[in-house]
Amino acid sequence: MDFHALGIVSDSHDDVDSVQIAVRAFRRYGVDHIVHCGDVTTPETALYFSGFKTTFVIGNNDNRDEIAEAAAEIGAVALEQPVCLDWHGKNIFLVHGHEDGMLLAENAFSSGDWDLVCFGHTHYAELRQSEKTILLNPGSLANGDFCILNSVGVVKQFNVQNYE
Image: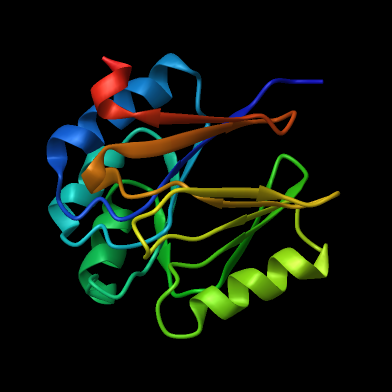
C-alpha cells in the first residue's frame, strides 16, 4: 500500500503566517492533496497553496468568483458546498458549514457512505469516528489549527504555536 497524506484546513481568514506554517508542515509530511473547507477570504491567501493539488470549498466569507479565479491560477479548484471527491480510493465529503452545510455534514456522517466528512465554519476542532466514517473539523487556521490525515486513517492535529 502506498502512503499518502491529506492536508485539511478551514477558516484561514487571511492569516498568512498560519497558512505559511501549515504549508511548510504539509511539505514536510508529504501531503499530496489539500482540502480547504472554506473562508479563505481573499484570493491572495489562496495563492499560498500553490504547488499542491488543492480543493477549496467556498465559505460564507469568500467571493466565489475571486477564489475560483485564484484557485485556477495555481491549478486548484474552488467549488460550492457540498463537494465530493475521491482521494486514493477514499470517498470524501466536504462542506464549509454555513446555510445547510452542518446538516449536510451530519447526514453524510450518519449515512456511512463516506470515509471522511470534513467541515469548517465553527472555528472549533472536532473529531468523531463511526465504524466507517471520520467526521473532522480541523478548527480555524486563523487560530493556528490544521490537520493531516494519512492513507491508513490516522489524523494528526496541529497548532502553529506548537508546530515550529
